[in-house]
Image (cartoon, rainbow, N blue to C red; front, side):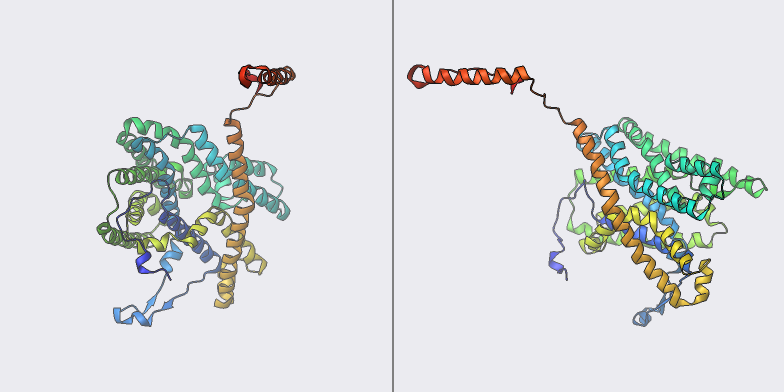
Amino acid sequence: MLGWNKLNWKDRDLSVKYIDVLDGVRAFCVLIIVWFHFWQQTWLMPVYPTPFLSWLGIEQIDPNLLRRVGYLFVDALMLLSAFLLFLPYARSMFLGEPEPSVKSFYKRRVARIVPSYVLCILIMLVIALVQGNYHGDWKFMLKDVFTHLTFTHMFFPDTYIFSQLNGALWVIAIEVQFYLVLPWLAKLFKKYHLLVLSGVMAVGLGFIYGFGSAWIRAGEAGLDRPIAMIYNQFPTFLPVFAIGMGCACLYVLYVKHCKWKRALGLPMAAVAIFALTLIWSMMEACMRAPNVQVWQMMYRLPLAGVFALFMLSLALAAKPLQVFFGNPITKWLAAISYNLFIWHQMLLVWMRQSFGFGSGGDVATAGPHMQWILTVLGLIVSLFIAWLATTLVEKPMANLILRARARARAPQKPKDLPTDRFLHVVLAASASQSAKEGDCGQAQSVAVPESSL
């Protein structure tokens, strides 16, 4: 067991390159989203008796809230992505480090995202064709594949809502759209700072409360305006991305001007716990809302603010709390989280169907025993497939892409021509002869042209 004296309570410098506790934040966010999707497929809703907490008036723990509105943690993943991706630019602006080139940024994002994404599309396409899910509609099939490969499937109702290629991929499309603009936002931010952040925030809020509200009113008036086509579009996430970029700047500035003090640890841990209570309260408000999708869009900014408060305070909190989030288990889960996110939902759907159940309600009818079997088995299979895809596809392909980039940038050694090699032999022989015939046995120096080496 980790000793209390090994938890490093001393004043220390903070890293601006790797923040280990954010591995845990990523891991827990993905696991909560997995739990939400598993609940959809099994309707498993366990309640845990807590007689040991009865003296506090807590007779049981019902995590129903996490199950029912776990999708809110997609916003936390978006915030975390903006935070971490903007860190190199923040270090460049405030610490004088070299700014990442646009080409380098894009190549690293391709290496990280595309291999596993394309593999998923290919596998899902084969399964859809074998099962006849397109019903001979080749035009829709081609559109479905093309829009997913170009990360534009969110723009069309059929390829977003009725896609046969894994509904969870909409999140990847939003991320890629953010990747496209991030390097250019960083260049503007370097010159105009708060003006750029304010502009990004204003565009996002204008879209939400202007265009989004008008869209909702039109839908309520009977027009064909499905809320699903508006509340998760890229502009609605702009305030989230802006807050993530701001978090990166605040963190780097703190590290630049301050050293972590032991006296700061406990207050920051208290702030992190307080932020968790605020997150819980907002989850409760979302579940009580008449339309959870409308609530999610309208309250995206304050929710991102609370998530940001938790992440920043956790990064500065006392070590005992940090160990819970930054440890080998959460690091491993974070490493496979991308493929876990991509595959978990489809894997459990296939498992449910293979057991002969048409819906989560059918699984619930079969009883808690079957609900637990599907849930536990689904989690084990999902973790294994995520690890396998990360080990055999994501990491090797990423290394291959990045090595190709490194080879392209490496200076090429000029090849020796036959005449160069002949000249080198002649000059070497001449030098040897001069050494034998020189005064006092001292060799006369003979310059060899660099081009012949």
